Image 1 (spheres, protein in one colour):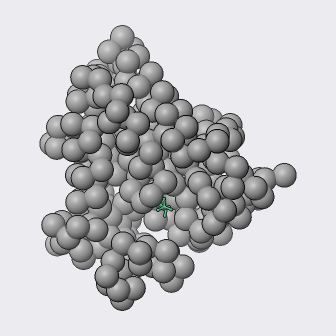
Image 2 (cartoon, rainbow, N blue to C red):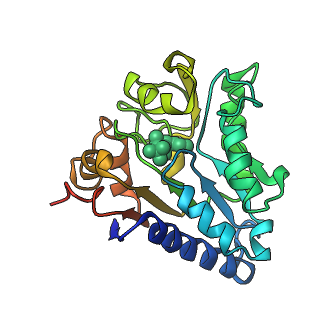
Length: 249
Ligand code: F6R
């Protein structure tokens, strides 16, 4: 695992945008030799941490970006797609619009599906059909979650329904008009799904993330800190500001 400490959120956004734009530029010449899929596939996260990445990509937009596909990490269960805080809406606002992506190539788990189990399976199939995720952007929660894989998540888990912890519901209450409005359940890519991405970039800023970052990067591999699963990934980079890096040894 590579840890990069940068001076600001803006520099983190630029660093990540460099990596993504390089990947997108390389794709037409390399392609997926075995599958024939040519589109670069970006795994996108919601929340505050990745916003500087989307802003940097918007500033430095190149036409090749319009051809990429995107898969979101997670979605609340039971929130209508049109709710401003559903991840369908957030991804549309922060990713699809800013990066001028083709909406038909942007996928978000279907937390409003009549058959959620079938929707989870369909999401896994859609990722495979797209040729797998080239680069997965991640944030980390105070609980150590990545995606909405809360503590006790299996390292081999796939897209499924999870119960949000009280800590995550409290953290995300800032996006809703009252804490009770935060849904109880979510649909999230599993840790196994995330580990299948060819490259992962985890972003964390601010002192509130320092303990979770230290447990994920330097702690033992444990499902009690789902972020620690990234220690198993062959190409994982953690982008931090000084405050988020403060508890690393
Ligand atoms: C979002 C997600 C979560 C967030 C995490 C950090 O799609 O999967 O894991 O990345 O909760 O959220 P922020 O960045 O808002 O602190």
